[in-house]
Every structure is written in C-alpha cells, then in structure tokens.
Length: 195
Image 1 (cartoon, rainbow, N blue to C red):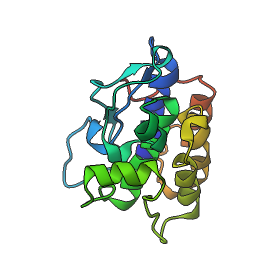
Image 2 (image 1 turned 60 degrees about the vertical axis):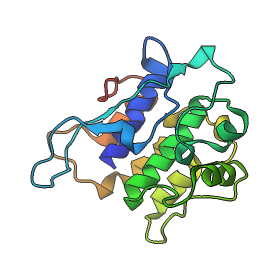
Image 3 (image 1 turned 90 degrees about the vertical axis):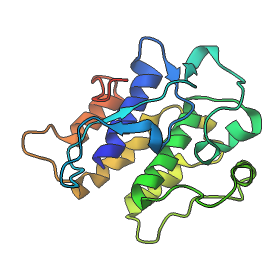
Image 4 (image 1 turned 45 degrees about the vertical axis):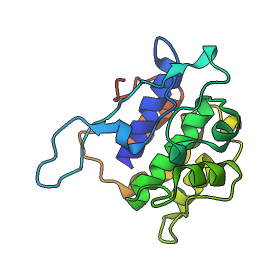
C-alpha cells in the first residue's frame, strides 16, 4: 500500500505541482526505483523514485504525439489515437498497481503488437486475481477504465486506497497515511517522491 501511495504522490506532483506540469508517458515498474539498498530481502519502509523522463512532455503543450512508451502500460486511447493526457498516466498507474498486486509482468509472453491490438480494442485485459482484496479490485477497476481520458488525475482515483490502510503497518512515528492522502489530494502537501 505504501508503494502505491508513494507512486500516486509522485504522479500528482508531476501532473499538478511541478514547476512545469508533465505527462510521464512511460510509467511502468522498471521506471520506479528504490532509493535505499535492499538488505536481508527487506522491502519495507523504502522510498520510491519515479525515473526515466525521456518521453515526458508538458501537459498543456501536448495533444497528438508520436507513439511512446510500452504497449502493456499504454491506455487504449493512446494506442488508438496517440493522444496522451494525465489520464493515460493514470491508466499506466493502474497497470503498475496490478504488477504490485500480482508480482507479474503484464501480458507476459504475448507479442507487443498483439498487446497493442488487444488493449486498443478492449479484448485484452489484466485479470484481477480472485484473492485480491475487494478494495484493491475496486480501485484497479476504476483506474483501468476504458476511456480513462475522462479521469482528471491520479488523486481522483487513489482516494479509495484509504480503506486499505489497515492492511499496512504504520510505525508510531509516521504521520497517518490517511491524513497524508487527504492533504495530498487537497494539494496541501508536497510528495515524498521528488522527481
């Protein structure tokens, strides 16, 4: 849950708080790195950093763009029209959450062009495991909505994660993640991921 929140904070910063608002256009797990080293296979309390801004573009100066990014993380409307938006980053965020949940690569073993076609025509979707907690399922279904261009920002979709906080241990010295999310989405806090 903490990693999902950190990535949402970073994307909110890019979209709404950075000196120049950006669309990442290539958000995927391989572009999110750990700041601290992994010791004894301990992945708790690590800081994530969003990286690889080679395909990023300014939000307000972009409409139709050349194809960029990786098909498995691209929103259907991007594949069909090459139009990127904040909402297409939200779709990519949904795919990234699916990766966090399953520990798998999306559409593993499927050819890139088959992925592009399948996602574009809504014939290829990521299966949400039956063991997935209900709150995660609802959140991911909300993020991976066809016509996601109607979504305005990551925070409009990440708010349901508040109900997942009980699944994560929060040290006594940490601020309540629910408070952080509320402040983040009301744009009162800077994200912990400085991009």
